[in-house]
Length: 400
Image (cartoon, rainbow, N blue to C red; front, side, top):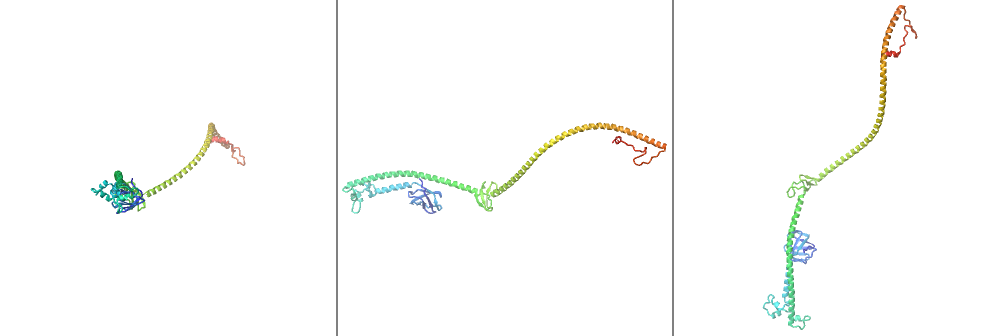
C-alpha cells in the first residue's frame, strides 16, 4: 500500500526531505517517492526519522513546501529481510550461540580444527570455561560436560531449525516483496505514464484557455498569444477603453457599447409603446364618443324616419288635394277661357256700342245745339254722368 500521510518539503539541490505530520519509521531503503511537483520518481536512500528522509540523488526541482506525495514500496523490503537473515546467521556463527562441534566446523575458518580448539572458544568470564559458566546457571549444578554439550547441541539444532524456518519465511516474504516490487514498479511506470498524460492534458487545457483569454492589451490583437488565428469567442481586456472585448469571427465587439445600444433601443421601444398606448386610449375614447353619437344618431334617425313617414303621408294627402285642385282649376280655366272669350265679344260689342253712342251723341249735340254743362259736387249732366262698370267684368274683358 502506498504511504501518503501528511505533506513534505523539498529544497533544490538538497537530498533531505522534511515531513509534516508524517511517520516514516516503517519505510525502507530503495522505496520510490513521487510528489505533486512532478512525475519524476525520487529514490529513498535512508530513513533518518519519522519526519526526515535522505534521497539517493539531490532534488533537482524547485524548492516547495506543503507538497502532497506518495511513497511506493519496492525491492528495498527484500533487502531488509535478507539483511535480517544475514544478521541471524552471523549470530548463529558466533561463540555465544553455543553451536555443536559439527556445526562449528562448518563456520568460516574452523575447518580442520580440533575439539579442544572448539572447547577453547567457549570462554566465559576470566578464569572460567563456558562449561563452568553453564554449571553456575540455575538447574545445571552437578551436570557433566557431556550433558553440557548435549544441551547446547540441542539448543543449536533448535536455533538452526528456527533460523531455517525464518530464512524460508524470509525467502517467501522476499519473493512476495519482489513480486510486489515488480507490481509497484509497473504501477509506478503506469502512474508516471498517466501523470505524463495528465500533464499533457493540463497543458492542452492551459493552451486552450490561453487561446481563449488573451489577457490585457492596449489595442485589438490580430492573432492569439501563440500567433495563431483568432478563435470565435476569444476575449481580452482593453486597457485603453477599460472594458472587455470579444471576437465574433470578423471583428472585436465591446459588450458595453452593445449593451448601451440595446438599452437605447429598449428606451426607444418603451417610448413608442407609451405613445402607442396613449393613441390607443385616445382612439378608445373617440370610439366611445362615436358609439354614443351613433346611439343618438340612431334615435334621431328613428325620429326622422317617423317624421318622414308622417311627412310622406301628408305629402300624399297634399298631392291628392293638389290633384283635386288642379282638376278644379282646369275646369275653372276652361270656364274662364269661355268667359274671357265671351267678355271679349261683349267688350267688342260695348266698344262698338260706345262708339255708336258717341257718334249719336255728337250728332244729337250738333243737331240740338247742346253744350256740356259745368258740374259741381256729385252731380253731372245726364250726358256726362259716369258709368258704373263692374270690375269683374272689366277684368274678364281685359283678360287679366
